[in-house]
Length: 345
Image (cartoon, rainbow, N blue to C red; front, side, top):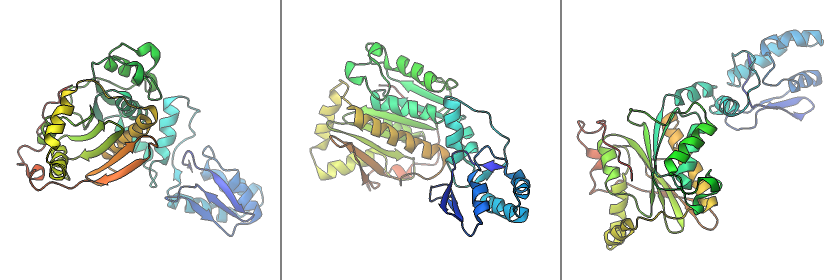
Protein backbone atom coordinates (compact mmCIF):
# COMPACT_ATOMS: atom_id res chain seq x y z
CA UNK A 1 0.00 0.00 0.00
CA UNK A 2 1.40 3.37 -1.03
CA UNK A 3 0.36 7.00 -1.23
CA UNK A 4 -1.22 7.98 -4.53
CA UNK A 5 1.38 9.42 -6.88
CA UNK A 6 1.76 13.19 -6.69
CA UNK A 7 0.66 13.58 -3.06
CA UNK A 8 2.93 15.41 -0.62
CA UNK A 9 3.06 15.22 3.15
CA UNK A 10 3.41 18.75 4.52
CA UNK A 11 4.08 20.03 8.04
CA UNK A 12 1.42 22.37 9.43
CA UNK A 13 2.80 22.61 12.97
CA UNK A 14 5.29 20.61 15.02
CA UNK A 15 2.52 18.09 15.84
CA UNK A 16 0.25 18.27 12.77
CA UNK A 17 0.77 17.27 9.13
CA UNK A 18 -1.34 17.54 5.99
CA UNK A 19 -1.45 14.98 3.18
CA UNK A 20 -2.30 16.52 -0.20
CA UNK A 21 -3.36 20.06 -1.03
CA UNK A 22 -6.46 19.63 -3.19
CA UNK A 23 -9.58 20.33 -1.06
CA UNK A 24 -11.33 17.36 -2.67
CA UNK A 25 -9.12 14.91 -0.81
CA UNK A 26 -6.53 16.62 1.40
CA UNK A 27 -6.42 15.29 4.98
CA UNK A 28 -5.07 16.91 8.15
CA UNK A 29 -3.57 14.69 10.86
CA UNK A 30 -3.51 16.63 14.15
CA UNK A 31 -2.49 15.67 17.69
CA UNK A 32 0.65 13.79 16.66
CA UNK A 33 3.82 13.54 18.62
CA UNK A 34 6.83 15.27 17.14
CA UNK A 35 8.36 11.90 16.34
CA UNK A 36 5.18 10.71 14.58
CA UNK A 37 5.07 13.90 12.53
CA UNK A 38 8.74 13.45 11.56
CA UNK A 39 8.03 9.84 10.51
CA UNK A 40 5.11 10.88 8.29
CA UNK A 41 7.14 13.65 6.68
CA UNK A 42 9.54 10.98 5.44
CA UNK A 43 6.70 9.21 3.58
CA UNK A 44 6.44 9.61 -0.20
CA UNK A 45 4.63 7.62 -2.96
CA UNK A 46 7.45 5.05 -2.97
CA UNK A 47 7.05 4.22 0.74
CA UNK A 48 5.39 0.89 1.55
CA UNK A 49 2.83 1.93 4.15
CA UNK A 50 2.11 -1.65 5.18
CA UNK A 51 5.54 -1.76 6.79
CA UNK A 52 5.42 1.69 8.36
CA UNK A 53 4.38 0.35 11.78
CA UNK A 54 7.53 -1.78 11.86
CA UNK A 55 9.63 1.28 11.10
CA UNK A 56 7.77 3.09 13.86
CA UNK A 57 8.54 0.33 16.36
CA UNK A 58 12.23 0.56 15.47
CA UNK A 59 12.09 4.27 16.26
CA UNK A 60 10.43 3.72 19.63
CA UNK A 61 6.95 4.80 18.44
CA UNK A 62 3.63 3.08 19.10
CA UNK A 63 3.01 0.73 16.11
CA UNK A 64 -0.73 0.67 16.83
CA UNK A 65 -1.05 4.44 16.45
CA UNK A 66 0.86 4.32 13.17
CA UNK A 67 -1.46 1.55 11.89
CA UNK A 68 -4.44 3.79 12.76
CA UNK A 69 -2.89 6.72 10.87
CA UNK A 70 -2.34 4.55 7.79
CA UNK A 71 -5.95 3.33 8.06
CA UNK A 72 -7.12 6.96 8.14
CA UNK A 73 -5.22 7.69 4.91
CA UNK A 74 -6.66 4.56 3.27
CA UNK A 75 -10.22 5.46 4.33
CA UNK A 76 -9.73 8.90 2.80
CA UNK A 77 -8.78 7.34 -0.56
CA UNK A 78 -5.22 8.63 -0.44
CA UNK A 79 -3.57 5.23 -0.84
CA UNK A 80 -3.39 2.52 -3.46
CA UNK A 81 -2.60 -1.17 -3.22
CA UNK A 82 0.15 -1.30 -5.81
CA UNK A 83 3.79 -2.38 -5.94
CA UNK A 84 6.60 0.08 -6.21
CA UNK A 85 6.60 1.58 -9.68
CA UNK A 86 9.79 2.04 -11.68
CA UNK A 87 10.81 5.54 -12.65
CA UNK A 88 8.95 6.41 -15.86
CA UNK A 89 9.79 9.06 -18.39
CA UNK A 90 7.83 10.73 -21.17
CA UNK A 91 4.07 10.29 -21.79
CA UNK A 92 3.87 7.13 -19.68
CA UNK A 93 5.00 9.04 -16.60
CA UNK A 94 2.54 11.85 -17.25
CA UNK A 95 -0.40 9.49 -17.74
CA UNK A 96 0.47 7.48 -14.62
CA UNK A 97 0.70 10.47 -12.31
CA UNK A 98 -2.34 12.24 -13.75
CA UNK A 99 -4.36 9.05 -13.46
CA UNK A 100 -3.57 8.75 -9.77
CA UNK A 101 -4.83 12.26 -9.08
CA UNK A 102 -7.91 12.37 -11.29
CA UNK A 103 -10.43 11.32 -8.72
CA UNK A 104 -10.84 11.42 -4.97
CA UNK A 105 -11.79 7.71 -4.86
CA UNK A 106 -8.36 6.59 -6.21
CA UNK A 107 -9.93 5.19 -9.38
CA UNK A 108 -7.94 7.55 -11.56
CA UNK A 109 -5.59 4.94 -13.08
CA UNK A 110 -8.53 2.77 -14.16
CA UNK A 111 -10.21 5.78 -15.68
CA UNK A 112 -7.10 6.55 -17.75
CA UNK A 113 -6.93 2.93 -18.89
CA UNK A 114 -10.52 3.17 -20.13
CA UNK A 115 -9.55 6.14 -22.29
CA UNK A 116 -7.36 3.82 -24.33
CA UNK A 117 -10.55 2.20 -25.67
CA UNK A 118 -12.13 5.50 -26.73
CA UNK A 119 -12.36 7.00 -30.22
CA UNK A 120 -12.57 10.75 -30.80
CA UNK A 121 -12.75 12.49 -34.16
CA UNK A 122 -11.36 16.00 -34.62
CA UNK A 123 -12.50 17.70 -37.84
CA UNK A 124 -10.70 20.97 -38.49
CA UNK A 125 -7.02 21.19 -37.58
CA UNK A 126 -6.09 24.80 -37.23
CA UNK A 127 -4.06 25.57 -34.09
CA UNK A 128 -7.12 25.09 -31.85
CA UNK A 129 -8.12 21.78 -33.41
CA UNK A 130 -4.54 20.52 -33.33
CA UNK A 131 -4.24 21.53 -29.67
CA UNK A 132 -7.40 19.59 -28.81
CA UNK A 133 -6.19 16.50 -30.68
CA UNK A 134 -2.75 16.58 -29.05
CA UNK A 135 -4.31 17.14 -25.63
CA UNK A 136 -6.57 14.12 -26.03
CA UNK A 137 -3.71 11.89 -27.19
CA UNK A 138 -1.52 13.02 -24.29
CA UNK A 139 -4.37 12.28 -21.87
CA UNK A 140 -4.50 8.66 -23.01
CA UNK A 141 -7.31 8.59 -25.59
CA UNK A 142 -6.47 5.52 -27.66
CA UNK A 143 -7.73 6.63 -31.06
CA UNK A 144 -7.82 10.23 -32.30
CA UNK A 145 -9.09 10.63 -35.86
CA UNK A 146 -7.87 13.80 -37.57
CA UNK A 147 -9.40 15.32 -40.69
CA UNK A 148 -8.32 18.47 -42.49
CA UNK A 149 -6.72 18.39 -45.94
CA UNK A 150 -5.92 22.11 -46.01
CA UNK A 151 -2.25 23.11 -45.82
CA UNK A 152 -0.54 24.45 -42.73
CA UNK A 153 -0.17 28.23 -43.04
CA UNK A 154 2.53 30.48 -41.61
CA UNK A 155 -0.05 31.96 -39.21
CA UNK A 156 -0.75 28.45 -37.86
CA UNK A 157 2.78 28.12 -36.48
CA UNK A 158 2.89 28.57 -32.73
CA UNK A 159 2.17 27.21 -29.28
CA UNK A 160 -0.28 24.50 -30.33
CA UNK A 161 2.30 22.49 -32.25
CA UNK A 162 2.81 23.51 -35.87
CA UNK A 163 6.38 24.43 -36.86
CA UNK A 164 7.79 26.46 -39.74
CA UNK A 165 8.91 23.26 -41.45
CA UNK A 166 5.25 22.12 -41.53
CA UNK A 167 4.06 25.05 -43.64
CA UNK A 168 2.54 23.83 -46.91
CA UNK A 169 1.98 20.25 -45.71
CA UNK A 170 -1.53 18.87 -45.23
CA UNK A 171 -2.69 19.58 -41.71
CA UNK A 172 -3.99 16.06 -41.10
CA UNK A 173 -0.63 14.50 -42.04
CA UNK A 174 1.31 16.81 -39.74
CA UNK A 175 -1.24 16.30 -36.96
CA UNK A 176 -0.95 12.51 -37.18
CA UNK A 177 2.82 12.77 -36.83
CA UNK A 178 2.57 15.13 -33.86
CA UNK A 179 0.10 12.85 -32.09
CA UNK A 180 2.48 9.92 -32.39
CA UNK A 181 5.33 12.11 -31.10
CA UNK A 182 3.30 12.91 -27.99
CA UNK A 183 1.68 9.48 -27.53
CA UNK A 184 3.48 6.76 -29.53
CA UNK A 185 0.70 4.21 -29.06
CA UNK A 186 -2.15 6.44 -30.26
CA UNK A 187 -4.03 5.31 -33.37
CA UNK A 188 -5.28 7.73 -36.02
CA UNK A 189 -7.48 5.22 -37.88
CA UNK A 190 -10.60 3.31 -36.87
CA UNK A 191 -13.79 1.91 -38.41
CA UNK A 192 -15.73 2.60 -35.22
CA UNK A 193 -18.20 5.43 -34.87
CA UNK A 194 -16.44 7.98 -32.62
CA UNK A 195 -17.54 8.34 -29.02
CA UNK A 196 -17.26 12.12 -29.50
CA UNK A 197 -16.70 14.26 -32.59
CA UNK A 198 -15.08 17.69 -32.31
CA UNK A 199 -16.14 20.12 -35.04
CA UNK A 200 -13.65 22.99 -35.34
CA UNK A 201 -15.07 25.41 -37.89
CA UNK A 202 -14.41 28.89 -39.21
CA UNK A 203 -16.77 31.83 -38.58
CA UNK A 204 -20.01 29.81 -38.22
CA UNK A 205 -21.00 26.22 -37.54
CA UNK A 206 -21.96 24.11 -40.55
CA UNK A 207 -25.78 23.77 -40.56
CA UNK A 208 -25.64 20.18 -41.86
CA UNK A 209 -23.04 18.45 -39.72
CA UNK A 210 -24.75 19.05 -36.39
CA UNK A 211 -28.17 17.64 -37.36
CA UNK A 212 -26.51 14.59 -38.96
CA UNK A 213 -24.67 13.85 -35.72
CA UNK A 214 -27.79 14.44 -33.62
CA UNK A 215 -29.75 12.03 -35.80
CA UNK A 216 -26.97 9.48 -35.44
CA UNK A 217 -26.89 9.85 -31.67
CA UNK A 218 -23.26 10.98 -31.67
CA UNK A 219 -22.07 13.43 -29.03
CA UNK A 220 -20.20 16.36 -30.55
CA UNK A 221 -18.38 19.46 -29.41
CA UNK A 222 -18.69 22.61 -31.48
CA UNK A 223 -15.70 24.94 -31.68
CA UNK A 224 -16.09 28.01 -33.89
CA UNK A 225 -13.15 30.29 -34.69
CA UNK A 226 -14.70 33.72 -35.20
CA UNK A 227 -13.53 37.23 -36.02
CA UNK A 228 -11.98 38.06 -32.64
CA UNK A 229 -12.76 35.09 -30.43
CA UNK A 230 -13.27 31.34 -30.32
CA UNK A 231 -16.58 29.86 -29.19
CA UNK A 232 -15.96 26.54 -27.42
CA UNK A 233 -19.13 24.52 -26.94
CA UNK A 234 -21.69 23.54 -26.36
CA UNK A 235 -21.03 19.84 -26.11
CA UNK A 236 -24.14 18.42 -27.75
CA UNK A 237 -25.42 15.15 -26.32
CA UNK A 238 -28.41 14.17 -28.48
CA UNK A 239 -31.61 14.26 -26.46
CA UNK A 240 -30.05 16.14 -23.55
CA UNK A 241 -29.78 19.89 -23.97
CA UNK A 242 -29.66 22.21 -26.98
CA UNK A 243 -28.16 21.32 -30.35
CA UNK A 244 -26.35 23.64 -32.77
CA UNK A 245 -29.59 24.35 -34.65
CA UNK A 246 -31.07 25.59 -31.35
CA UNK A 247 -28.27 28.15 -31.16
CA UNK A 248 -28.98 29.41 -34.67
CA UNK A 249 -32.69 29.69 -33.88
CA UNK A 250 -31.91 31.73 -30.76
CA UNK A 251 -29.62 33.99 -32.80
CA UNK A 252 -32.38 34.45 -35.39
CA UNK A 253 -34.82 35.41 -32.62
CA UNK A 254 -32.36 38.08 -31.50
CA UNK A 255 -31.50 39.25 -35.04
CA UNK A 256 -33.78 38.48 -37.98
CA UNK A 257 -30.89 39.05 -40.38
CA UNK A 258 -28.80 36.26 -38.84
CA UNK A 259 -29.62 33.63 -41.52
CA UNK A 260 -28.46 36.02 -44.26
CA UNK A 261 -25.29 36.87 -42.36
CA UNK A 262 -24.65 33.19 -41.66
CA UNK A 263 -24.93 32.32 -45.35
CA UNK A 264 -22.35 34.95 -46.27
CA UNK A 265 -19.95 33.81 -43.55
CA UNK A 266 -20.22 30.19 -44.71
CA UNK A 267 -19.40 31.24 -48.27
CA UNK A 268 -15.95 32.43 -47.14
CA UNK A 269 -13.81 29.31 -47.57
CA UNK A 270 -10.60 30.81 -46.21
CA UNK A 271 -9.41 29.63 -42.82
CA UNK A 272 -9.78 32.07 -39.96
CA UNK A 273 -6.71 33.24 -38.08
CA UNK A 274 -6.26 31.84 -34.56
CA UNK A 275 -4.01 33.92 -32.27
CA UNK A 276 -1.74 31.76 -30.12
CA UNK A 277 -3.05 32.62 -26.65
CA UNK A 278 -6.68 32.26 -27.69
CA UNK A 279 -5.97 28.98 -29.49
CA UNK A 280 -4.11 27.55 -26.48
CA UNK A 281 -6.88 28.41 -24.02
CA UNK A 282 -9.58 27.19 -26.40
CA UNK A 283 -7.74 23.92 -27.01
CA UNK A 284 -7.49 23.29 -23.28
CA UNK A 285 -11.20 23.95 -22.78
CA UNK A 286 -12.11 21.74 -25.72
CA UNK A 287 -9.96 18.81 -24.62
CA UNK A 288 -11.29 19.08 -21.06
CA UNK A 289 -14.91 19.03 -22.28
CA UNK A 290 -14.30 15.89 -24.35
CA UNK A 291 -12.47 14.11 -21.53
CA UNK A 292 -15.29 14.87 -19.10
CA UNK A 293 -17.71 13.24 -21.53
CA UNK A 294 -15.48 10.19 -22.07
CA UNK A 295 -14.79 9.78 -18.35
CA UNK A 296 -18.44 10.26 -17.35
CA UNK A 297 -17.45 12.71 -14.62
CA UNK A 298 -19.94 15.48 -15.29
CA UNK A 299 -18.29 18.53 -16.80
CA UNK A 300 -20.11 21.69 -17.84
CA UNK A 301 -23.91 21.68 -17.85
CA UNK A 302 -25.68 20.96 -21.17
CA UNK A 303 -25.83 24.07 -23.32
CA UNK A 304 -22.70 25.65 -21.84
CA UNK A 305 -20.27 27.44 -24.13
CA UNK A 306 -17.18 29.53 -23.50
CA UNK A 307 -16.20 32.62 -25.48
CA UNK A 308 -12.41 33.05 -25.50
CA UNK A 309 -11.86 36.58 -26.69
CA UNK A 310 -9.04 38.85 -27.74
CA UNK A 311 -7.05 40.45 -26.25
CA UNK A 312 -7.25 38.88 -22.79
CA UNK A 313 -8.13 35.25 -23.76
CA UNK A 314 -10.22 34.95 -20.57
CA UNK A 315 -13.10 32.45 -21.10
CA UNK A 316 -16.59 33.86 -20.60
CA UNK A 317 -19.30 31.32 -19.86
CA UNK A 318 -22.60 31.42 -21.70
CA UNK A 319 -25.65 29.18 -21.29
CA UNK A 320 -27.98 28.12 -24.11
CA UNK A 321 -31.42 26.55 -23.81
CA UNK A 322 -33.26 24.12 -26.08
CA UNK A 323 -35.20 26.18 -28.63
CA UNK A 324 -38.92 25.37 -28.59
CA UNK A 325 -39.09 25.25 -32.40
CA UNK A 326 -36.16 22.87 -32.90
CA UNK A 327 -37.48 19.52 -31.73
CA UNK A 328 -33.99 18.03 -31.29
CA UNK A 329 -34.87 16.55 -27.91
CA UNK A 330 -37.92 14.73 -29.30
CA UNK A 331 -36.35 12.59 -32.04
CA UNK A 332 -37.87 9.15 -32.58
CA UNK A 333 -36.14 6.45 -30.57
CA UNK A 334 -35.39 4.61 -33.84
CA UNK A 335 -33.17 7.50 -34.94
CA UNK A 336 -31.26 8.33 -31.79
CA UNK A 337 -28.31 5.99 -31.53
CA UNK A 338 -28.23 5.00 -35.20
CA UNK A 339 -24.77 5.89 -36.58
CA UNK A 340 -24.77 8.64 -39.17
CA UNK A 341 -22.04 9.72 -41.58
CA UNK A 342 -19.43 12.26 -40.54
CA UNK A 343 -18.17 14.25 -43.51
CA UNK A 344 -14.96 16.23 -43.69
CA UNK A 345 -14.70 19.82 -44.78
